Structures are given as structure tokens and as C-alpha cells.
Length: 104
Image (cartoon, helix red, strand yellow):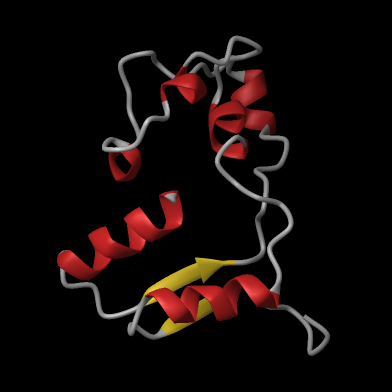
């Protein structure tokens, strides 16, 4: 799966830890992008994902913006079970960014 491929790539590149962002499962409404009519240029690619088959994300037609492409990559149902699973696929330390309260 995509996560396993990214983790393996990080390990091979010599990363010392995995940083998991837990506070932004989707990108919010980017007022500046809307105001400036930002459109993700068709020639740009997400370098971390270039070895994976993500062409469908680059063909999104609604606004062509960063929000459409990025939100298509994230699973909004992230839980602590996912962190436990991540621990099973790598010996690297896992840092979780974005935990705001003790309940989190």
C-alpha cells in the first residue's frame, strides 16, 4: 500500500523517524488560493508519490487546486489503531504531530 511504500522510501533514504500529522486529515478552505484563483499546474507532480499510480488525482477537474489533489490522498478516519499498525511496519520512532488534548 501507499503508506508502506512511503515508509520504505524513508528508511532507505536514512530518515531517523516517521512524523505522522494527525491534525489535518483534510486541507481547509484556502481563502488566498480562492481569491488568487490558484490552479495546480498540470506539469507539477508530488515527488513523494511519483513511483505510485496517482494519475487519477492529477485529473481532478473541479478546481484543479491543491485542496482537490491533497484531500484525495488522506484517510479522514485516522485512529490510534493506525499508529499501532505503523509501528508494526517500521523500527523507526513514530512522532505524532497535532495532538491537542489528553483525550486525543
